Each structure stands twice: as structure tokens, then as C-alpha cells.
Image (cartoon, rainbow, N blue to C red):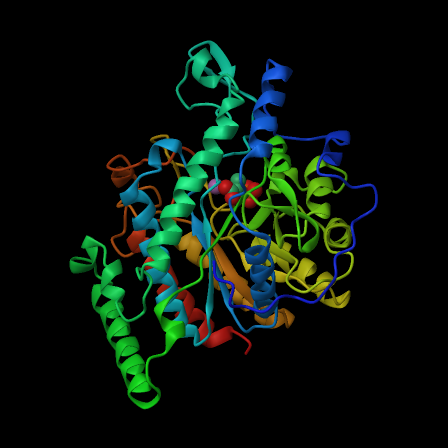
Length: 461
Ligand code: PEP
Ligand code: CO
């Protein structure tokens, strides 16, 4: 969220026949049914009059930073909740999530020896795609929960009704989250001279604590050494942080799509970095239509059924001019499928010479349900997918430029395995996720350490 980075020079031409509402002419999957069109229109009008959450300057600075990542000069760490909830818009939850992301990025900076680009899955991650439109319990069928932006998880007809006023509440909660994150970061919370600000209580007891503390001490030593020679180094005292969410509910995104005085084109100013989910990435669908017209850097989730024949036209639609930093592809294949599904895609994109940032999401292809009914992910599968991703990129001559993770700063037990080897029985202890299982702080830090170890062996320069 700084203005320090230079601006990209590529001019924006407005795509043909595009407007912030042109998506409405296409099929829009995963949208709720609102009972009263007038009520929805009223909420969208109010939203469109409110200030945006981010600025075009920040959006363009992030695009430049992503262009650097495409060239291997930065590594992207994108992470946060699967679904934010209004109830979790609290000081400890926001600051603990920020702490774990900062701790992970410290590990990555130290181990990868390059700057880490930090992007949160927060301040707007309130809409969820679902596999079915309805949910049935004991003979009663109601609309599925689609995230706090749409309805509420309680299983009653009132709670599950799609309520357009939630568009305004989501904007307000996103603004509260952003405000707190910005204040913490500007206030020195992210100061590399004081990583002790980010210690979570667990560091005392974790099997990883010693390794983390050694790393912090080493960074402190080098910082003091450099500053003895060169004087205080301003860049180390603050950290950039950007936001992202799945831009799923297009009425919300449209209302926050704006023009600004000194930049051409349209910006989605609800977030720096919106992405298209796997279920809504059809070439002729509403989401691709909306995304092709905004100037933000954008990402698309790519699942194991995508073929090169589908991927290349999508790249053309979203980045026709091959603009640096514009397009990120987040592959989420599953540890069993990545070896088969990823190589043809890497090969096709490389052959066509298209500029993308490849990022691995080792979470969403590894979801399973345990015999006691919990949706979970095994740490070994998450790690396995990530290890394979590094190897597959290395042998394809492409670069894995980042990771996309679902995590929390809380001591939850949602994913199995990790340093404390959480089991099926442990899941009952602290399972809090409303949608997908997240890495807890310890598993997140462990994964960051494993990324460093793995990439030391296989990352091209
Ligand atoms: C998500 O990121 O929470 C998600 C639903 O991912 P995907 O679209 O990859 O399934
Ligand atoms: Co998820």
C-alpha cells in the first residue's frame, strides 16, 4: 500500500463493447437469486456512491510488482481465510492473520533472498462459490450459504435469504479491515527491526520455534551490520501489503468499478487484485467479460480439467496485449493430478511466449471429507503438491513465482498433519472454518520453511 514503486508505462485501451455492466449480457454462474430487483438496485446505487477501498495508484503499483515477480525478482505470498465473515472482523483475528503472513514472509525473504510481495485474501473475501444451489437437512431444503456478502450460514429461511443490504455491510467491513491493516503497517507493526511484535504466543511451545528464532536473529544481525555501515535503511521499516478476493458477486464488483481523474480506463477499486474462481472461468461467461475490461492485475484459478485449448483463448481474452503484471494463473490441481495436468499447460504457455505469473494453490485440489464428517486437507498432500509444482516448473523451464494459501492466525485444527501431526480426532477440538479448512499459524510457518528448503534446490534464478 505504498506509492513508492514506479508506474507501468503500458497505455490502456478500452476493450471493444465493454462497460462495467456488460457482464449482464452473459451467463453469470454462482450468483444468488434476489427476490426483489428494486431492493438490489437500491443497494447497488448506494454502494456506487460510497468511496472506494483502494486507489488506482496502488493498483498500478501492484501491477508493476507482479511484473517484477514474472521476471523472478519477487516471490508472491498470497494468503488468508477461505471465507471472511462479518463476525470475524475483530482486532485479534485481523492482527493475528497479519502477523502470520508477516512471519511467513520473513522466512521467505530470508530463505529465497528476494523481496516477497504480500497479498492478503482479506478485506472483501466475502462471497463463496458452492457446488449446489440448495442444501437439504432432515427433509428441509434451503438456499446454500454463499458467503456473508450474500446470506448467513444459519439454517433458517430468513438467514439463507439473499439480502442486498449485505453488499453495503461487506463494503463497510472491508473498509474497517483495510483501515486497521493500513494503520498497523504504517504504525511500524511490520518493522523488520522489531519482528518480536509479531510473535504469537505459540512461538514459546512450537517445535518450529527454535528455527524461527534463529532466522529472526540472523536477519537482525545483518540489518544491524548494514546499518552500522550505511546508516538507517528506511525500506526495512515498512512493508507493502495488498488485498485480493474472488470477484464472484458481480453486482458488488460493478458498483465499485470506477474511473479516476488521471488514469485511463476502469478500475475495480474494491480490491487491488481480484481473481476469477475455477467454477466461473468460462471464456464466454460473465466473469471473464467483466474482468477483461478492468485495469487491475487479475488472476484466474486453473483446475485439473483445463486444457491448453481452453487456457490460451482465456489468456488472449484477459491479456490481449501481453501487458506485464496483468495476468496471474493460479494452478490448483491436487497432489494426485498435478503431475499429469500441469505440464501440458506450462508447455503451451511457454510455446506461445505468453507472459503470466504462475502461482501454486496447493489447498483447493486436496480437500477431502473424513469419516467423522469434517472437510479437511492433509498437510502431506499440500506439501506434496507444492514440492511437485517446484519440480514441474523447473523441468518445464518455467518459474513458480508464488503461492496462494488458505490460512489463519488462530490455533485452529482444520488441516491434518504438520509438525504436531494433527489427526482426525484433533479436528473436533477447534474446527472453526465456515467453508474450507485452513492451515493454522504453525502449519503456515512450517510450510513457509518447507518452501524455502524446496526452492533452494529447484528455483531458477
Ligand atoms: C477459493 O479460493 O476459496 C476457491 C473456491 O477456489 P477455487 O475457485 O480454486 O475452487
Ligand atoms: Co477455499
